Amino acid sequence: MADENTVYIGKKPTMNYVLAVVTVFNSGSDEVIIKARGKSISRAVDVAEITKNRFVQDTKIKDIQISTEQLTGEDGRTSNVSSIEISISK
Image (tube, rainbow, N blue to C red; front, side):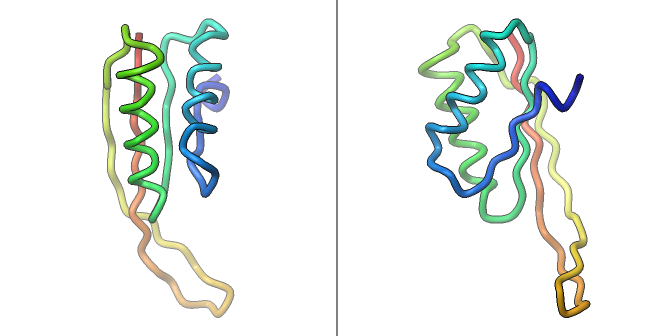
C-alpha cells in the first residue's frame, strides 16, 4: 500500500511529478509520500509546494524526513547521498 502512495522524483519536468501526486490524491488516497535523492531534492520540494498551493489546496505537509544513504558505485567506491521524504496529507 505504501508504494502505491509514493512518488519517486527523478529528472523529468516538475509538472510531471505534480500530476502524479494529484492523480494519487484523486484516486482516493489521503496521503502521498514524495521521495527524492541527491540533486532531485529541490525538485521534490517544488512538487510538494506546487501541489499544496495550486492544485490540491486542502492539503498540508504532514512530515519531512531527511537522511543520508551510502551508495556503491560501479568502481566499488562508496559515496554518501542525501535523501528526503515529504508526506502530504488531506
